[in-house]
View 1 (cartoon, rainbow, N blue to C red):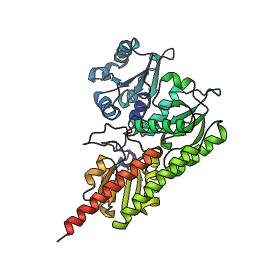
View 2: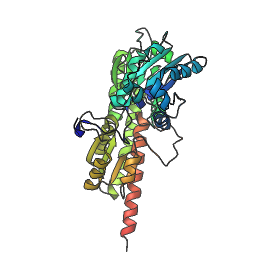
View 3: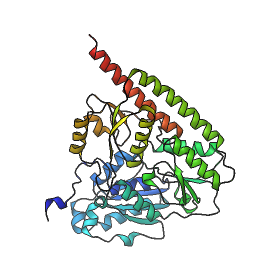
Length: 380
């Protein structure tokens, strides 16, 4: 087969389908997640997810003589500790063609066949969610939240902010996909709002996104039409308050500096949200929106990203630590995993009103610091 028929997965800039499946399942507190593969397949998602996960840590003999006994041993060790166990298959057992479905039983142990070569993080996330098969209870009250993924540095902040906004409007929170208990997936509400449309659950009726002030206003207007007791007034007041604060800060910035040239590297939904905000408030020139998860031309080639940054010389880069390495003199805001070399203890949000304010805080501070540095360097 010609070489160009092969798709390289060496040091990917975006996690694979296996990692996406693990991230989805690890969001359910009462589910033990077992990565059925080598130690490398375990440690990569473990470094991103920061949640308890387990592995079979396959070695050469097990690959040669069969991996099922090792998997059965790990499952047996975990059965007394967890009510449910999810096994995520990886590339080596999948290529071997070994049938491990016989280990699934009684809805307590289920197998998610999501080897990395199937696709990207989103593919695996949705594959795992399909295996869980959430059930909608049409009598359930509240609103589901989706788009939460444990590889996302903002997942906890997004969850807290989405819950805050729903409570502010008088709504209750139903199931959070995926940061909840497994039992919550058996009684999901018929309505859902999202923090990241790239990871929309497909559960219930979609009422809108929480990425950006306009989207938030539209989402709560849609909820008010179908949910009795929703009060949009406090949401609209807070949206107007945030908009005024952002405009004031951005006007002050633009009196001192030119609009920035910006390159954005992230998932499609986060990237488009950031581009909208920067165009609207800073009249930014967006040189690239390079989405990691585009189906046709995903921005996962380090050399291509290097060329984009070198050719366009942006003033500001939004992306991951990979782009930060290439940023040179540009200001940088971490929007995309992995974000290394810094402590991230606070539950930062990208979604919701607080998420919009956080993004503009980071952008304005990064660009202002760069502008001051350049000004000082040019002073005689």
